[in-house]
Picture 1: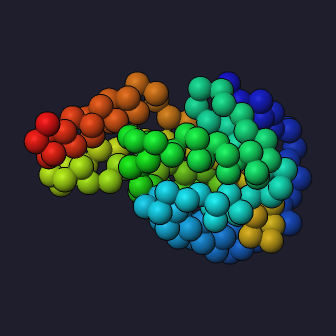
Picture 2 (picture 1 turned 90 degrees about the vertical axis):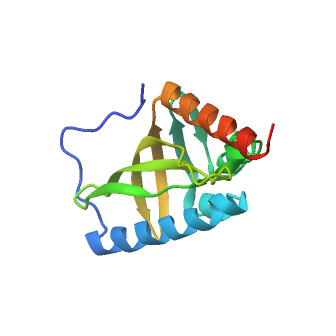
Length: 162
C-alpha cells in the first residue's frame, strides 16, 4: 500500500496544464528510447535528485541514483530486458495539484512470431517543475505480469526451435 497521504485541501500547482502536458510528452519520448536501448539513465534524469518511486509489491526507491540502480537490476536480465515498449492507453492531468495519472502497457519485444505480450500498469506521477518529476507510483497485477512473461518465453523458445 502506498505511503502517500493526500491532504484534504491540496495547494494549487505552480505549473500550467500545458507545461505538465509538454513534459509528459517528452517523458514518453524518452521512455520509447530507453526501453529498446536497455539504458534507463536518461529517463531517471527526468526525476528530481530526491524523487520517490514506488513499484507494485511495496518496493520503494528513494533518489535518482537509486532509481538508476533499480532499473539496471530490475530490467537488466531476460525476460525483463525485453520489456521494450510502454504505449499509453490514457492519461489525466490534475493541473491544480500537479499530478498526472495514466494507464499504459508494459509490452515485450516481438519474440519472433509477431505475437504481442503485455500487461497493464497504472501510474501516478507528481510534476516538480523544470521538466522534472518528484514522485512515481506504479501498480500492476504481478500474476498478469507472470502470465505475460511466461507467454513471451514460450513464444521465444518456439521461434528459436527449442
